[in-house]
Length: 185
Image (cartoon, rainbow, N blue to C red):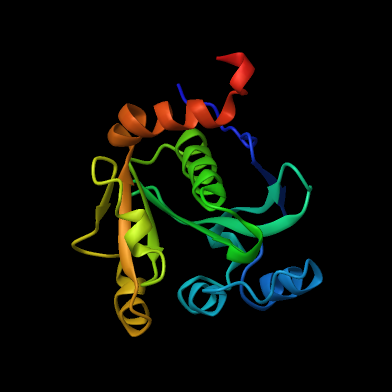
């Protein structure tokens, strides 16, 4: 059984009201996160309908308590057993691995909270190479969800996925190292 961790060594997820579109932009402006790279691409492929947003988090650095990005869980499809996640963080305020740590927390939270067999997410040309470094766990989707086919192609996005069985086999081991302190091992 998965536990919905929201705290790792260097990052934490601070849950906030699930909003999309213009309301999300307003929240991000207030938090000074409105200039994040790939934000416009995310907003153009996401939803304005708050009902389709299952959860929204700020990504917070543990050492400074600074909000450095956000994570979104949306488009829950119980019929197909899948859900979309997105994590966007400021690369100028995150050294290597912090965005990945936050992504692992969001992926695990989604699997722990909803009975889905697959999580999918969009990779921009800027972050595809990093995300594709985990072929045992992350795969490119041959048939992206319909709403992403046209808008995703327009932005050069590639849709990647993690299946629950692979997450439970590989991802949870990695996450376990991230959520335990070095002294607790």
